[in-house]
Amino acid sequence: MALARAVPVPVRSSWALLGAVFLSLNLIWTSSMTQAAIYHYTGACIQTDKVFLPGQTFMKGCNKCYCHDTGFVCFSPNKPTSWPEKCQRIPAECGYRVVYRENPDVDCRAYSWIG
Image (cartoon, rainbow, N blue to C red):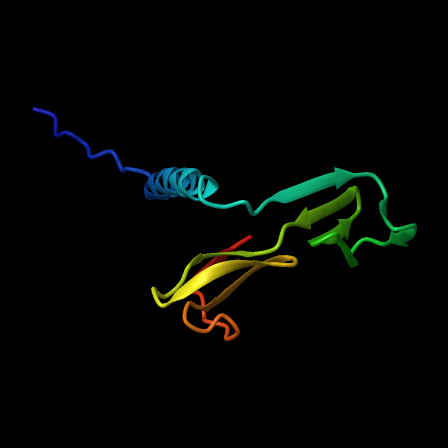
């Protein structure tokens, strides 16, 4: 009678699959709750008639842009996603502020940001 041999389960691929599923669910969950975005442009890094070199950063409106060899990438301002109940998120010139409900002149610390 032959003995059955155990076939090893590749742990690394199982973790990779689990990570991919988690990331997909996280992106689906956060995409419906945020307006934060990433924009990619190809071509020269030019803003207001100024040329930027790879590695340099510049502002395009409220978006912060990073120049690289084949173009540039811009990120919209961070957006708070959670804060204490006694606080609230309010729009600001380029993004948002988290302030106390009873004293909107005082900033409140947000728990998390995305952007």
